[in-house]
Length: 213
Image 1 (tube, rainbow, N blue to C red):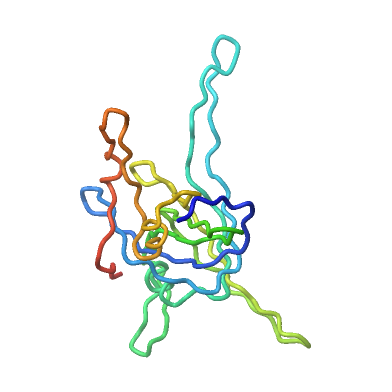
Image 2: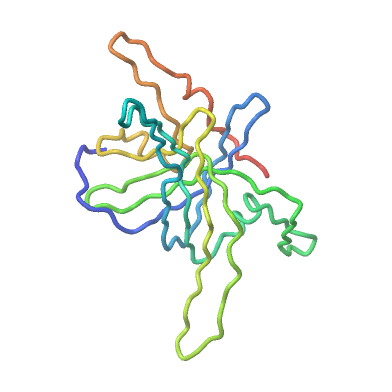
């Protein structure tokens, strides 16, 4: 990707989700990203305030408390695949979607991008859950008003600490172009001595096979 800097961002698009599974030994695996067409808006607020430790009469130490993000993803309609894969609604013998209160919803990575004046800015949130959307509509009047559906999203840190990633002005073409093929996982960066820290990187991986719910 050319090293040119965006001046502005606008318009959410290209929303995808990728199912997250966690093995007994704690290894995280992602399925193939699935498109979620009809994105209208997204608004995610940081979750977790820093804690300040006071000593000697002043703020002696500030403790980071990054608990991820919380907010809303608004769509024209929540795709049926997301309802079955993540919200765990099931299709009966007549292909009717059934919601079951005894079934636990799934976790997923959320991928999306914003348009920019130069390049699109691509994001991934690694460990998300979603609440059921509100059931809402209204009678048709002189003009038809489209009713959207909103998912309440909670994006928490993975066990290793990673919360999200986004493309930069100098992201490699391979990483940028492959953003929606597999969930991007951080690559270890070598220090001046040539050593690299891959502890967090090894805790999660992509699966070449789509995860089946």
